Amino acid sequence: GAATPAGSGGAQRRADIAASFQRVAVEHLVERVERAIGWAREAEPGLTCVVVAGGVAANGEVRRQLSGACSRAGLPMVCPPVRLCTDNGTMVAWAGMLRLWLGLAEPPLRESDELDLFVEVRPKWPIGPRDRRSTTQAQQLAKRKTPAQASAAAEAAGYAPAPLAAPAAPAGGSAAEEAGEKRARG
Image 1 (cartoon, rainbow, N blue to C red):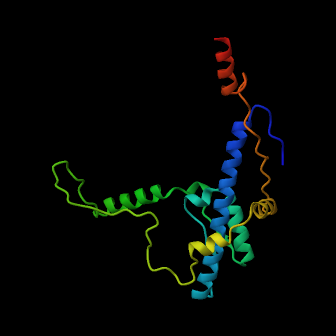
Image 2: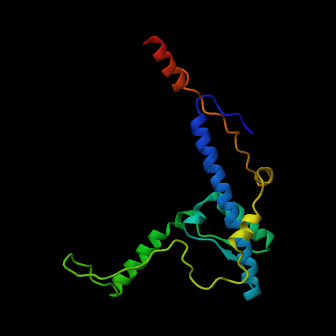
Image 3: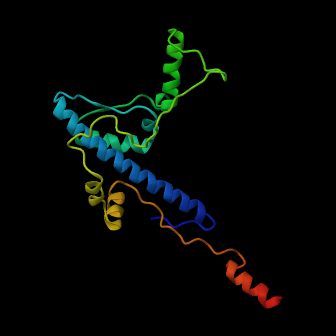
């Protein structure tokens, strides 16, 4: 990899961490899409394409890696133009606006309205029953790569992050050294 330029160790380290996170997130997404293609072909053998849309489709690396997964599966990947790949919040707002235009909106709540509502919020709340083909967390953890395997996979995928440099010591030495000097002087 390229050497870390002097004076940019912190910025380079943050960039390397961000790139590493993106690499792992995209690998996970590709794995899930490849699995979904297989499952979709079981249900619909005449599958003709894979559509990637929404905010995730605005990411160039996601597009590149998913395009490769689709090519390996022999399917074209269809994406809207990046300018139309927006966050779900925009889509939800648009649906709300359409409901308002159609007269399907409810009046806004007033402070005087008495509410007795409660919704339990759970992260990763299942939408339906677990698919029998779905793997368990233990199976997923067993498939994790060793650091050497992950590095080789990253290089094979075209990633070549700069090596992480050790953080530079402050200009006057370490805080412990400075404290020792103060005690010696005073």
